Image 1 (tube, one colour):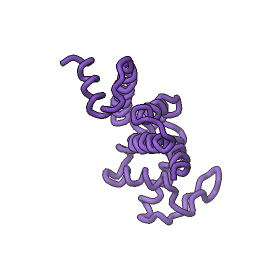
Image 2 (spheres, one colour):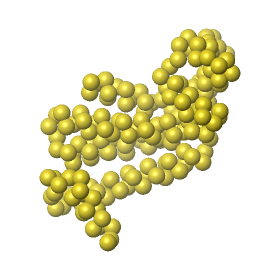
Image 3 (tube, helix red, strand yellow):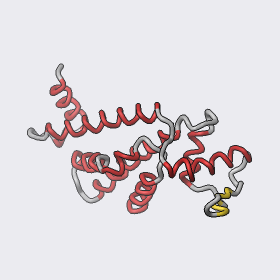
Image 4 (cartoon, one colour):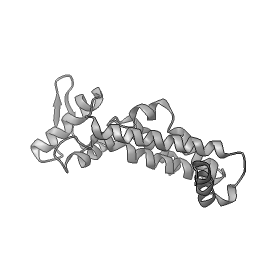
Length: 172
């Protein structure tokens, strides 16, 4: 079975009532996004956290929590004094990825599941607006090709998390 037949079978399985000829190029977009996600996932596994925001702000808070053995340890920064009097949401997510190994092996994977949640929320939001299944999934998937998402997918930066929070707040 060739790749064209595989796309047709996948389209038939998931979108039976949206079967229209001429939309096969859209499945190529989905395939490209899956391939791009796989490459970003591989890069996230092999590189350490490198962006300034994660290294200078988010990771030192985690280190203080790990050294103190408590989330209530106040983080003092040289440039700003006491910064964290309470656990922030993104730092909690990063700590769940840091604690199993005691280091930052999995920190770059934090945005992958957040992007998956964002895709589902956009799908549900578009379905409430009356958009068809196929176009709802396509709308969610096309958000993933925005430069912000492409640049931050394999990093521990907080912008994708904040965008997901805003869209979830709009949905609920």
